[in-house]
Amino acid sequence: MKFVCDSTQLYEACQILQRAASVKTTIEAVEGILIVAGDNSLKLTGYDLEMGITTTIDAFVEQKGKILLKASTFTEILRKLPSEKVSVESDARNIAKITSGEFKSSLIGRDPDEYPELPAVVGGYAVSIKETVFKDMIRKTIFSVAVKDTKIVHTGVRFEIENNNIRMIAVDGVRLAIRNEPIAYDGDPLTFVVPAKTLSEILKILGDGDERIEMSVGNKHIIMDIGGYRFVSRLLEGEFLNYRGAIPSVCKTQVRVKTEMLLDSVERTSNIINDKIKNPVKCSFNSSGINVSAVGAIGNTEEKISAEITGDECVIGFNNKYVIDALRVCDCDEVNLLLNGPIAPILIKPIEGDDFIFLILPVRLKNEN
Image (cartoon, rainbow, N blue to C red; front, side):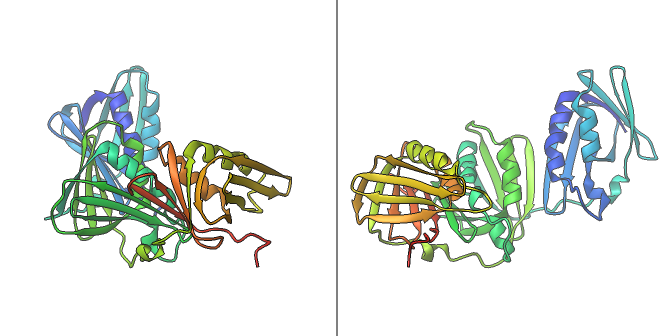
């Protein structure tokens, strides 16, 4: 195999593909990037048996062939090449000679036939969504995914697609995030769970354009075509939390507050909270506004902010990080806070509609009975 291509283009592709290559594994082949040189193009693949990424770039191919190179090493070699072009040539022993300007390197590869084949989705359901919308939906849910959970299904984001609407849901036991969006879809109802790792990597390459993301959803895998890259991911199996039952249908206290004002206040209050001793942020809601306070090992803080409050007065405690995570992705000037007393969860919603819903369980304050 021998080819010449743009060094920057090859590096940028490998930088993304190596995210799908395993770092610690007993199967050494999946630590690599598979390079297949065809008719004036290279097909590049990274796959860790759970998530795969493929892309194709232009190249001048002198000799067709394929090779498997360790992803981390090959990508690092490409990172600061001295020339705009790079030449890669491999022999029967799977040794790759890499040349760029006056730079030369050789890298021992592996037999490309050892590389596992990516799963295919045959007869999958087709779903299309705008890139900017999908990016926002991931941002507004992924922070609530469980990092460690006895139920693996909660380490992913649940998708529900039906009646021209897509809904994404994430839970981690103490908080819930929901994002709704209308889309053009009138097929059979779909429900599936995508691993958070897959969505996290997708989020890194999503832009702010109006291009469309094309999905093909199968029984065990999903394929997503995004900006010249194809993501293939397994779907998580298991019984997802009945989240609908966790959302209160009524509220005793409704608060309308400026998002940035509340976020800034909670962040300022967090300065005296020790990570080891997770004292809650205390919020007192009354007719004159919101009193945000905290007591920590090194001191205390208190601040009054204005808000429109209707209903019962309420004093409630929260984990500061959970509130900050939710407010940071609201992307609107004002939000509604819906409360039902000091031990009931709080809902954070937009002023109008239900594009997003964030639910956070409170922390019991020490002076409560």
